[in-house]
Length: 82
Image (cartoon, rainbow, N blue to C red):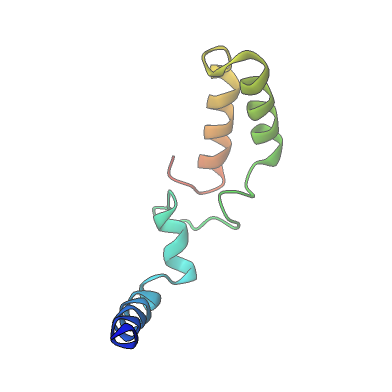
C-alpha cells in the first residue's frame, strides 16, 4: 500500500518538473517583460542589496526607504519586474 502512494507522488513530481524550466524561473521570480535578466534575482545588485540589508538591520525598514527604492530601481534596470 505504501508503494502505491509513492508511485502517485512520483508521477505528480515528474509531471510538474517540465513546467519549471530555467527560463520560466526568472519570470516566476519577479520576471521580465521582454528583456531577460542576466542573473538570478538573488545575485543581482549586490551593492545596493548589501547597503539596504545593513540599513534595515541597524535602523529598521521604515528608516531605509531611499536605499530600498535604490535597490528596487537597480533590480528593474537589471531586467526584473519589481
